Amino acid sequence: MLAAGLLLGDQLLKAWALSNLQQGAPAIPVIPGILDWVLTFNTGAAWSMFSGSAVPLAVVRLLVGLGILVYLTLRPQTRFLSLVLSLIAAGAIGNAIDGLRFGKVTDMIHAPFLSAITRALGQGDFPIFNLADMCVVLGTLLLLLASFRRDPHTR
Image (cartoon, rainbow, N blue to C red; front, top):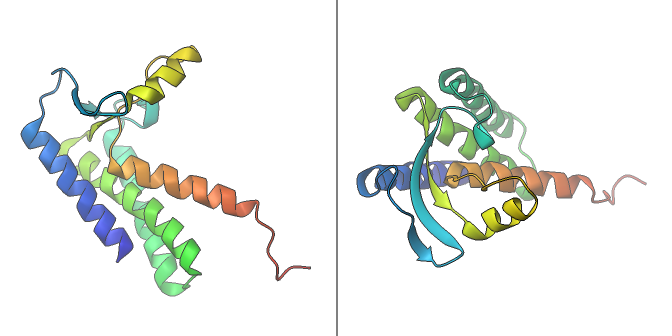
């Protein structure tokens, strides 16, 4: 249910962005210095890696997302792991839908404070992203952090 809700939210936000924002238009501040709306498209992965590979990436994303959901259905996990894997699955499928439908992924969330950090590190602007990207990154970070936690059952 969580993955379905996040997927729906991602698709609704992308539909809103396509209807209300224009590519190349100035950023629309939501929370000045923190969050802006900026419409852009990506035919690759984060930081435009693999640009021009939207459809092959979409197929891989779809397979990964569906594979995770099948895994969770066949092998129920703890609430935490189910949450984390649902985040990753929703994000993967959300971006796969865009890649298969449009040949590109719709991005609209700009975080100026993140760009300030990446520019200070000499890496240019932080990429504009979407809810699906946030789900994948948050899920992956939580999974990574959990991997450092000691399991009390293994002594």
